[in-house]
Length: 487
Image (cartoon, rainbow, N blue to C red; front, side, top):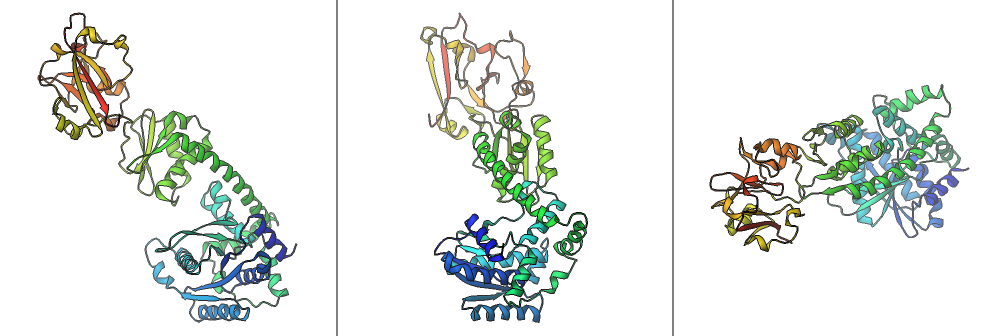
């Protein structure tokens, strides 16, 4: 199959272009991008697309870089194509901590392409990555450690995030992704193309260049088809990744919820019931949604979190990169900013305390989103089956046993009460909270009903005190209902 046929098949198979579309073609002047431009120009009438040539001078190679820019401009004009040339100071960008020259050049190049595409109304950017580049990428990701996302290498089409001040996003297309470099060089010879050659591509101090010039030739002595095999691995991994991603999105919708603080909370039992691959994928998906990417999130981080969530105790914490942390509860776990606390679903949190039970103005501030209703009843007014009340946020008490000056407060060191059903035996509140698996983050602000003697008469939503229960001798019943404001 010729290069023209391979590229045409790739474009149609992956729907890389659309009729009437303007395609921005990134051209360095080297064999790959020059071949790409020549092929796309030949296919343009059939595809009904318009081409615009773009070249960024990185300013790293002095006169050679200037000559490359001039070559691209001259070639585009000779072929009757519009062209935009721009210069960037990549050396200054690479001087910033933590940014390599390769990364700075890539960032500058994609920023330039996204800005120019926005100006021209182009919706896709074509680049000259080929089948050999794909093999190098897969091998590079494997050596650095990667899952399916990395082993699929580069995709025929992928999003190109816009640069600063540019709205929307672009599609980055790679029409040469299944074309070997040898075929590209042969195409250039056959069509009398005279590409520029970047001597920095021979510098083996760069990781990718070492793979290209040292490791891959060595691997070819073990298997001459290693480049083709790595490309096939990428295709298999891409399909498997898509399948796993679809299951991940469905599981995320079923098991996760976002909070106002930006954290993601998962149902623990549901997560633990998933296959290991989905457990890992869900953790990565949460990080991706919180940080917009998976930079520095490696196998070790995910695996430690998986192990802790499967075997750890409530309260366990897992440090994740990018300032994130996971915290384990009894029935749920959360991923969010470092120091995150696992909120209690549907429970009031006492922000001001102590507060008088009938002080309505202060109660609304003390229990935001909740209101407290009270009412006096006679025992005969209690509804049938009141002992089996299904709403934990309402309870009935012997009004005379409660005493006066009822208030709500948070817990204090040494708090004890007599849980209903324990025959008047006293229990430390801290032990009770542990026994009922109340998350640690909720304990300090959990509302407690107390009397003037500061006795705990109701651990709200959980247990009434034995001393305040309704009995056969009760003549007045106090009904208390903590109710969500929206209800």
